[in-house]
Length: 109
Image (cartoon, rainbow, N blue to C red; front, side):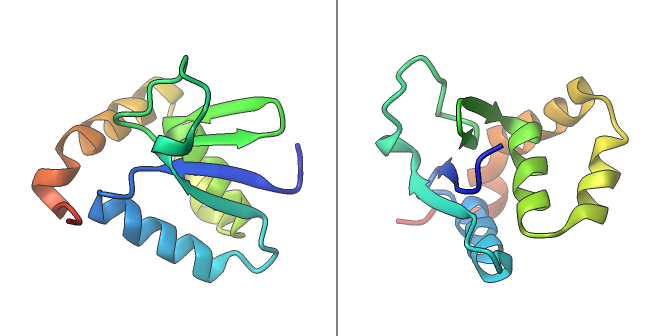
């Protein structure tokens, strides 16, 4: 696992923007770099409804990406709690939120 991790997110999503702001504020080691998802050069990855984390040679998506970010900002208890649930359940919840994020949280213009 590398020290610096690139996080690609939807800059038009209010939930995503607030999550990024929260992570930046709590990233004491400056281990996360946040980039808009349209800068992602790997066209094989679906970037429409997910956060992508590039950690060295690993590409993490959905709940796995969130867990890594939580670990990096030292929210290990929250990360541990989320890990209790199987990946497919975590990703179902993630997909639901991702699908309706604009309706629930709004869009940044």
